[in-house]
Image 1 (cartoon, rainbow, N blue to C red):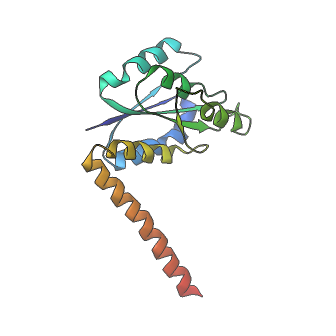
Image 2 (image 1 turned 30 degrees about the horizontal axis):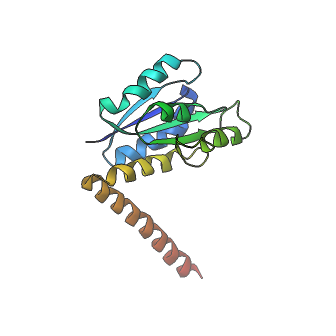
Image 3 (image 1 turned 120 degrees about the vertical axis):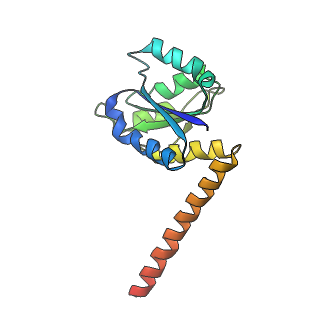
Length: 163
């Protein structure tokens, strides 16, 4: 089964990043979670980024707040797709610093960027990437999207019944 690595700059990012873990597990995708700080553990960052593809990882989700260098640094060294999750942290400028740090990558070093604190969407996007070559995961993504559609239709019926 494919595996997604979820890394974040510190334990304070975990409440946000947990949503990616949860959604990936709901698709039965194995998740490897770790703390890898671009600024405080650069050797660990290098080791992880250079070798993730050798350890069965298919996609990397990297969450970071503040200056948010982690996703870009991982993408600069890894051949795998990287999804960046900007995290609104205590040292953040309303989260905009994190969003822009992850979003504004130079040409040649792409990072797919989701919304501020958008780890759930990062998990779904990772599943979709894996689903493009894994029919079992693709079927689960299709079922998930059908479930979203059903919720909207059911909600519309409830509203219509009240008016």
